Image (cartoon, rainbow, N blue to C red):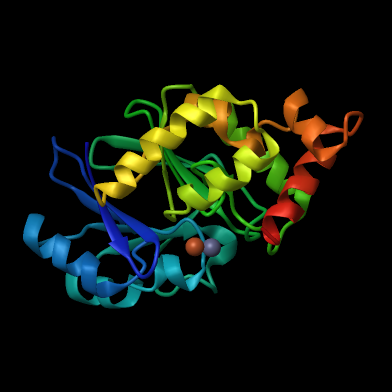
Length: 253
Ligand code: ZN
Ligand code: FE
């Protein structure tokens, strides 16, 4: 599978993918028409499918114009049928679908929004996580509960360690500053800082990361780390309480 990262808006990423065997082309979360259309035009001149992780404008902004130009089919979560413009295929939790020969599984991960999903291909070892799991961070809890967001993150955390994570935003640098503040003795994090800085200096995305790297460095997956608990002064708190505290602190970071 070919994956092309398309920077959009301020800090969004849309992802253009192609199945090499069948030449079927899809885009995940087209934030806006312009940059997505430019890349499609340059590479493939067609777009078979549009996949949306959730209904926020910075993930669906290109839907209508792209569908109009390329006649693409739009896939999204069933409960978001009124919130995703021009949706064609209503996906259920656990539902599999094909992009050419690539099989994707829909994973329902509410919290950021009530209809948020991830797209996971076991064989290709990739997951598109939208605004739920970021590199070194997670999305704000807007429509769901902390408990839902916590469980959603754990669903992703349980995917195989070598799965590559493609998320909705380039927030990694700011996320790093938060992680190191409350997990100051994490050496994986210190190593990761060098990698992040080098990529940013060269104008490159810090994406993708992997499940293994995120478990080692992303504080929102490290609610059971004693260093984190100590930094928060919450040694006896439950995992969910730690997660809630971290999310609240990050909202005002
Ligand atoms: Zn969002
Ligand atoms: Fe977003």
